[in-house]
Length: 439
Image 1 (cartoon, rainbow, N blue to C red):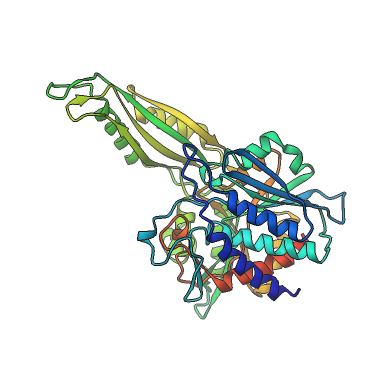
Image 2: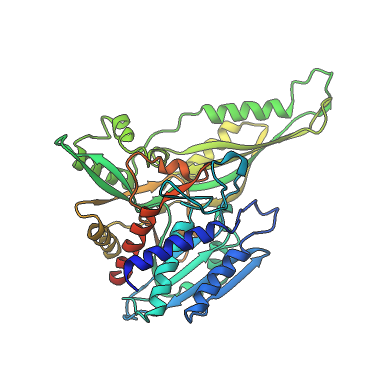
């Protein structure tokens, strides 16, 4: 099978995976990965592979298979994706979010970028390796995890905690939200040049609750200890807080690369630099400081009753090295009558950039797009690489996609009308195909 046939298979698998509604509605609801995982298992068994399958929570299924490499003295690589997606409301979409339809040269549907297209690129290359009995340069663990959209509790985190032997000997991992292109103007003003953003760092997160307490009573009576008011005041203080901007190492390396290509220095003209990368702006802007967002509210049960407590859920994101200081600040801002309860917390990720794997990624990109550069960046969000990091595995985001310059790529993640160009999936499949032969 030639590489164009592998790419065509990746497009087909992307569409078929999207048609499985694997929406993750949270841990209060059953998982919905069973059918999609079964599809992956059938594909793998169809080429003679026998994957390991784990379902620690109903409907949350992870599928893992190891391919033995030529050099057993080398450390192994984990190439992984997740099968679950965030929910989608069909009425809000131009096309059915679970149809996998192609319109205007793009595959539409929930998971098109996050991350069933990457799952498909991985799968198509894995199927080719198995069919042709190809031996990769080193051991590669291929994993399709459950539950990433709910923090990975029943997916990557569970596998790391309960079956670390699955990843024995592995020291590097590749997954999502990196490898996509941005198009930058050249410093001579006469052209443009593509750069591909390699995710080498991630902010950490803490999902927490603000629990305000007060004096309950009748709604008709004066009350200067109202829990809802206290909560609202705490939310306002946290929301209004100005978090310091900082260029961590991966961000500084990104801006140095952009300066080299464009001649524009982010240290002196940050707005112009951000304007030059519409496809990545949200991700990059989110990596310049710590942030807190309010995500849910829960207070009261009757119109004429002042409740004893009120609750808000917040999403805290912090840069490498910032966790303790940030959470201390959140508690100070919450105030005396508001408790901060951390439900789930994962540390930031910061992986080495000057290593052979990164050089191999750059080589694979350059072979498909001569003259393009690979630049590191820090992801404002989180991936399953954080869980593998607990085993000493350095994680990278490299789901290669060559994108139109004006596509607001970052906005498609968890957004309405999520879609990915067919040509981008084909490009990424070719890049991965080359990478797996030289990694």
